[in-house]
Image (cartoon, rainbow, N blue to C red; front, side):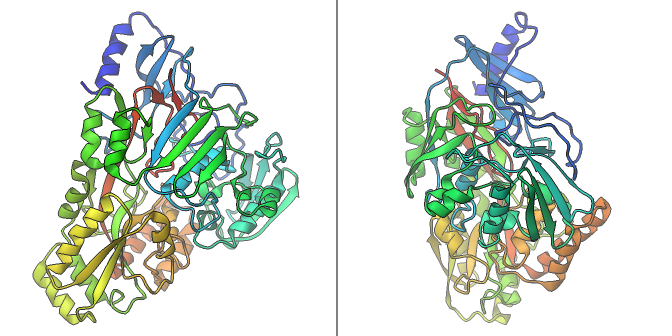
Length: 580
């Protein structure tokens, strides 16, 4: 019997005994701050929300209790609503398992990460992997965060306002200290923004983009002026790259200084590329974490990850092989969180390479690709094949589903290839580990069928990121992810010149102008028109082909809870726990 069914059955048995189950925990949000209200109102441009509570236990989001199972004096509750794309028998994003009162916790949690951790700095181009983003939520705070109801909430800022979406005022908390004991002030926000603007290709570069001036009006008030109105600027600062760093720490120690934040955990040890250890910040300004120590261990072999979970050596795995997912779904000793990530697994073309920059060549490839085959060989039933012709996030608003997909047609593929500049050269598909390697090999075979010779090179994510930056002339083909966020303005990160995720080196002046115009557009109908037009132009240019979206899983043993899973992969592990 699957875990959810098991928990639900126990709840029915307990229903006569409990009129109400009171629960504490991390709350159903995306931040290490207490959970906000569950309002479904759109994210405001002006907030006067009160500062988060500093009680000793986080406040649960009032989403209702689905099920509960007692364990000793404590227990688990499963709360929230399953999201689209959830596999039966697992817990989807928008759900969280919280501890009941009286639960006792283990001090240490051991977690497997799927990529090597090499850089702990949100303002470094080498620190952009998904595992980096998870760590930034633990180590740092942002001015604001985005909850699961898609409402912007205060974190280090208590309120903010703008009259024109170009000049923004943020009012800050006055009771926060960094891990090194320094008082958090407006000067740290100014330093963070200024340092971010010197690091193209970093997450922070994307989050603090467009600033023409930033200044501290006093110790706890910051004024930010943008080069143009940007209605989603506050949302942009909710992303992990908006993390606030400490000026004095970085200037004193450029290597370990960036590790200093204001978050619920601090980095106590790091072996580059191998392991990372977090220790609970007992001086944290918000509710303390349940876990005292978290050990993150890089395990490159997917089979080894499964074995380490099964033998109890590790408590959590962020990336189990799709072929092993069902093993855990059907085992009552494990909990599986699943989510269709808002990232498209795509084949990207370098638009500045003489061969892949030729549209005839891109059309040849587009007609050669069989998405179903690539998806199935990669992830089996844990993949969602792209059914339209747009390059866009699966859950990103204003997706233009009316754009037709270029169908597989090998005869047309060969015709376009004959018209292209390709003359039999050996090309390379650069990809990252795990499932994308096998789908890259399938794409390699599909291209070979029309006469295109490719090799597949698997790199770690850090190497891939450094070798696929905007303007890199060595790249030809890339099989990786398009990191669209839950706000449509994230299109800029993927398609605008010099942005971190524009790995195609795509530069269409008409698209650039449309992106500039939509950033300040307040009318949803006009926004839709512009975003649809952007997608149409990109579909005509073909800088990238969306292949599939993978349904990702996080697997834990049945004593672990408190993970907040989000479709943008910016999960919150602040209030993770392991019951004794």
